[in-house]
Length: 260
Image 1 (cartoon, helix red, strand yellow):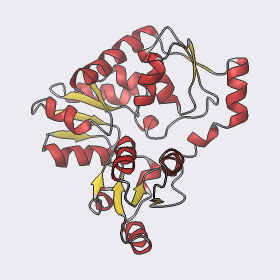
Image 2 (spheres, one colour):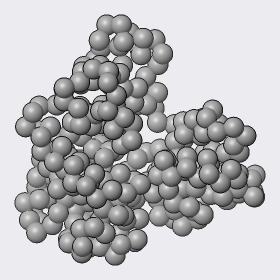
Image 3 (cartoon, helix red, strand yellow):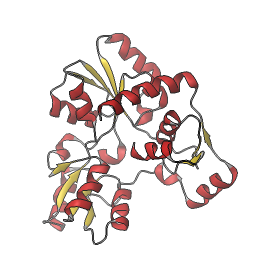
Image 4 (cartoon, rainbow, N blue to C red):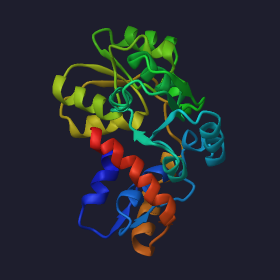
């Protein structure tokens, strides 16, 4: 979410988003006047695609007394059908702010489980998941601790509850980066390995280790330097969000920013 906010604030009128589609869509929601490009239009997110607008409409119809809290890792259509959006960093705070209201949480079941555990909220949780975080196992944690016994275990809340139970810190990617920067102590990173590479590049003498070396988001890797260069040079591929969807999605995002 931070990167989409940055994209919305920079003076440039064209933004090339080296990420996945829901990120680029969110940037367009926040800054409709800008031209948002994505180097490879196949760069979707299986988690975001795990729930359709029709499925969420059915849920809302079935449970009209519940508020819809959607994770930012969703399509623009899902955000437009939501009452409020959250990130993995602020999901607990967002739900706590709702003051005991009944909730439909979409789309990540593991993040939803973590939020429910932290808040005790009455939540119906959609059963989507991130295949990268879902692959982590308790055995992975034990193996990593054997290799790095002095390292803290940092686990993303998109991981399964049995893995999260072994965490010294449950944190979003921004939370993990903050830990590495401020603590300067060894850490096992339980999320997509790209974060570890960023930490090693930006934080001098950091000691971070992957929970699993092949924890790779394949669609993220659709973006390559040649594709990025072509996107800049030729303007491929432009991301659009219809005005009616954008306005409703913006309202859900704005409600989040008013809280955090």
